[in-house]
Length: 414
Image (cartoon, rainbow, N blue to C red; front, side):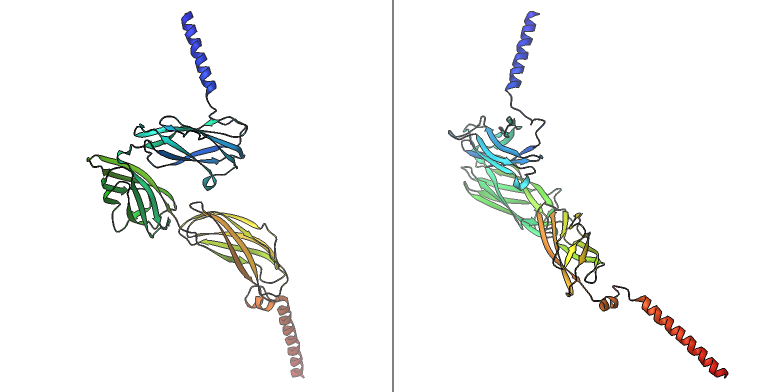
């Protein structure tokens, strides 16, 4: 029993020492910054034994507090290493609250791949810390390694146009690079469009290249058309390709390319209705925004500015929200038109919104509000005429006629 107790005590001591030596893997409770780290890519992909590979990470702050003086550290393990004299720690400065997407911070490390590295995926570790806090170790990221004997890289993708419009034609050009020291033959490339609102046009979704010499590039081009009712967005399209080496060995590879589908928003803005028709008057103005494009818009905010001729009485900004394709939204304002001899005033509008791919837009629009004098406003039925004056005239005519009739009757009797 004593031996068992001693062994158990030793195990507990070892566990405690192991836990105390680990890095912090979660921020303290009081921390209001929520860091998110993405493994963007590796170049080249796959990496080659005995050469370098660049790995890129994106840091985003999804929290409510600025992450100050952020440092990152790569923790290379076999088969990866840093060159002598290269620091594993990088200072990337502060990351503001909500700094993400295109505004995220990109960090790049160059690693050497051991010449005896085996084919497959190998793990790399990364950690970071914020000023005043401990290191936070991220889950392992994986880097693809392929021996140099027969490596064919999917090197580049170009879509024309860059954003494919639903219902219109486009081309996707894929470039392959042979970084092997041998000829690669019978390269067969296939793009898989299942779940993607695109279809091949004029050919199939599969292409063949007879051969690619060592250190040479080759391109395949696919003619596609966007489905007319396809939703805008960024789509991941799997690419399968296979090839043979000089010995007849076959290789099969899978990759993914990104294709953007959408179109520039097409908005029409008009004055839908108003109760203001004359200078010196207060009234309501309803602005109508019509989405004539094929893409939806979201987070629309309408702002009306003042001018020398009018003053905004209501809030100057109205949040409209999302407007689907072939739909509209309205924004209501209350304004006072000052005394002016002008026949119209200009309403300066600013529309701020995003498309389906979260691209921001800010449109400046000047709308004309026509003004009329009293006679014109009555003529066009924009204001009511003086009904009391007309009624009095009718009464006077009737009374006058009555007295004339009585006088005529008296003369007739006489």
